[in-house]
Image (cartoon, rainbow over all chains, first blue to last red; front, side):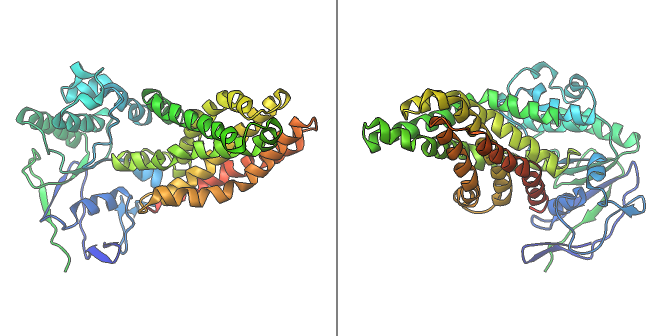
Length: 194
Length: 216
């Protein structure tokens, strides 16, 4: 597949597959198109060329169906500073199901549930964004540098989340510059298009 | 969709200054007319219907450029598009939320604004109805405009240029309705025409807005 943004080819001639429970690390220098690839896989950026198949069928034939089987963790945390930690999760819990308390427990934010999100530190905001992943199981996680700002203990907890997700048959695609707690992950290296 | 609307209203409740700003803007603009036109009650009453509508639509326009802008900046828009709701559902909720937090509060200020413009008391009820329908129309058309101008440089300037010309029919029918009520004539035909505008915007504007969000 290939993606074109403006006049620029971000990447082209890319082909890969990911099996349930598998993890694929996207690596490469800044500007190689890691984030764009994740956005394209989420269906947020149109493919200029090629196709994306889900179990042999066009993944984007039903955008809502595709959206329902994936979680996308972007650089932006998508948090509302004026809402409390728990309120930030409420809408997503209503969409996907899942227990807010358990999700906050998984990222060790439960004691801060009633605090407005603007009071959180950068690392805590990241953990709150990760809590969205912990809400309900789904088939595919698209993670854009998920461990930025996390302390060692949080990375370990994040590793537990990832292990549980993969044990349940979930696939992970993660763009990263640092090692992630993903044992047995394959690596896909992107090079900037000329 | 209900959950998304609840989130919109909760966010608005946490930022009451935004709603208050629109209401105060509406009152201040109508308060400028007596100063500009002079203290002649007849001249003011003649101007009142048009001035009320123009002021209300401008006030409702104020928060529109942040409607999707704020969501796009903090990454929420991407997440909303992946929430399983269609673009049309998201924009319908956004438009409804905009009306509930901006248009509806303006209605409560309408009697005050009407009094400042010497609008006959008999016409207040029709004025509230006309403003309610006109701002509802603007919320939906404006949501489409906000989705289209999202990401455009100077989107905040582009938005009124795009939306205000479309609001002209709402001004014409709304003002004609209030004027009819003020002079003791039936306002019903004008309000029905205004209602027809709203009925057309209700499905069409979210359709356009949803498509614009998807292809951004």
